[in-house]
Length: 275
Image (tube, rainbow, N blue to C red):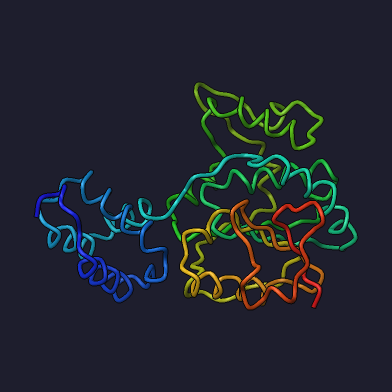
């Protein structure tokens, strides 16, 4: 098979079954169109002469399997992404969280962690960081290493600074990092309360009770069954009157948990658990 040729549905099905059996990663309920596009892209970029060789490499080379996971999971994120969302967190969610003696927040599918650092900055500015734990999880261990380092490209700081100001930030954004060459290293005080771990939304269970769960722009890549499963997991993991925050194109409206939640009035994708 030429790498430019389309991979069949049967090929993808066999590959995904291999991945489940050998590595325990279940991508079978991911959006088919998105998954096909990403597998096809990797197959073509790495110039495999035939699908059988591509499949053999994934089955027998754990290092290449890590590359496979990194390529087919989506790792696009930025600091203070959608500033109005962070403004809503500042003004409507953090004042409620402040009433708790201890705050537990879960960032599910956090990728390289820019949004986790954004949350740490919000908590710092609200004088809540000292009593907060931020659980940062993703299926992909490679992206979590980037989160642990707290180092991001300096070229992105201008955009992040603009997002920060639009979200209601009052300080100089540059106070939170040290620039060196082409990198920005964020203040280690921001990451003291971060617990970083791999977690698979398909197969892993709830691991704590939270007052806020943030999972943005992950569910859009899931089929409905998997989306409902992930939302039920969040529901099990969220305390009553806790908050669930999703991405701008995500919704719980037609899910089994919808009746237990009420969306915040400003139409941000933030819901409060009322039952």
